[in-house]
Length: 436
Image (cartoon, rainbow, N blue to C red):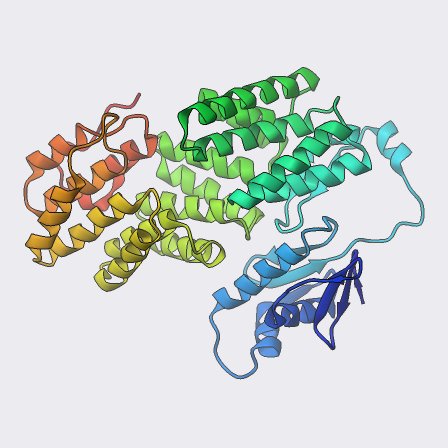
């Protein structure tokens, strides 16, 4: 049977495109078979479980993981998507064949083009997308899909697609605007200061190129992330109210501005708009942790790690959540896993694990971890400042905790939120820190 541009054999459980067979696990294809039997209709999750896992109990996270794999496999055809229907199930959305082309009607009427991102089940308002044309639109959709995934290989593919978008439609703002956001994402991940600055400069150039061609929500998003302008975030949201990336970035802005509750609401919105993207889920988990909504935080981080298991920051925050829920063994396991990934969060995870030792009466290893952390670097502690302060609190020395916070890196805006909202510092006499 045909699923967009794919050939699916439900009996043999094979999926191919343009004659090339795709490597998709059989279990995921079994889920696809159930959905394909009722195209464009909601299939209840209970029915999927009964058909795909008939032999016994299975966690809902397993279904979510199979759907994620299917979305990746089907990402090559933006007309096809697996839509999440909250609290009900999933729907396989297939393209509706048209008997005639109506492009002239769209141009004359000035209607906007609704851009479908394959895995996100989101409809994004693009005021200028009608200028793109069919070839550029296809490149643009693929670029946005990979940009939302945010992994290194995805970001490289996103840049290639957005470069092609600009080459196909140099007079439209879309490619430049989305590439400006991509420039910022890659600059934030870049460890070399010179290359990071080059990317930030490129982002500003792309942002200006987009604005020269018209107002675009991603150009506003890029400018808002640079200038910390709430007005630009709100305008971007108004132009594209169903865009998960904009909602997620706006949520992080509110988190860094000291409003975890508002951030949590925005990240919930983002994760519903794009259930398979890990970034909104992680940000929802972090915001919910600082809003002391530990049930939501734990659920969001569990789902994020099911999609991106190598995210050391996700494991670190889930460890903090388990700690706040008084589950020290689970917290230790998560923090130990974060450390084993050897990422940028390792030092903070070591200190957070030491806090568990201190509160359990294992003072010697806790003090050893504190000593190993050493003095803050010249720029000051980042998130480690909060973990160091928490450790001093566990030792019953609040004055030393306050001293540790004097060394925090004020450029790390999330630290200022943590100082005020982290439950481990709840009894600290002086918690509020001056914001930049």
